[in-house]
Length: 258
Image (cartoon, rainbow, N blue to C red; front, side, top):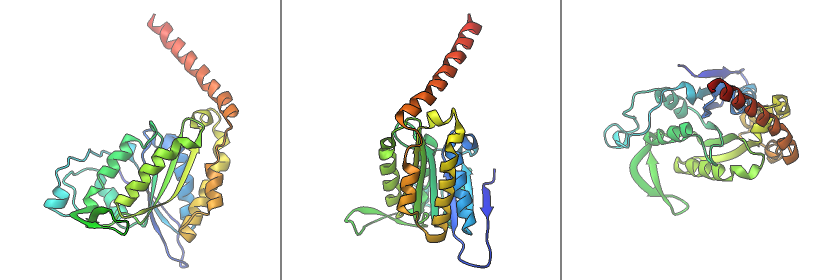
């Protein structure tokens, strides 16, 4: 399956290559996709070429720790699967947008497999970096900039702290930098009235356009995106609708099993 590609380019300005990886199990049906798609449209508006990969549509095996990529064919994974297309886009991009819903305070399992399978970018050799820490040198380079896009079921923005820390060290391990975290909490409430998300989708589009134009997202825009859409009381009111739906569904199944 090929990746979706958005290109909006003219003869003015330098085009930036970006790759978006969506680690949501729901693929294009979830809030993670909506956020990523809006960011991608903004990137495209600023003349970027955007390649999007939905991991739920891909066949990607776990890393086997065989070290073929280091000891036999440097930079080449021994597993022949859909990571091949993603490798090609990673090598020619300067921005990696990591989209994952928050699963038990961290990234989805699909996203973790993706990061493990990026180890072929590393050499078996190590060197001490400017921070006095030892890390691998590289056969090929991952995108220079990482941006995290996430959503969580619960309404508190503090829920993203562990995930953001994990993605930051992933970027560090690959010689890259996490330059922004765009995280929207409260999706369990938002899913019951998805129109509440619309203003944030426009902010995400603006963030994509800003990065594509200036290679940064203004701090005030990041703060506006990361402010919870729903207060705790609003979240509870919306979530009660979901609980009511769950009860009806469970009652239906209980009666059919009787």
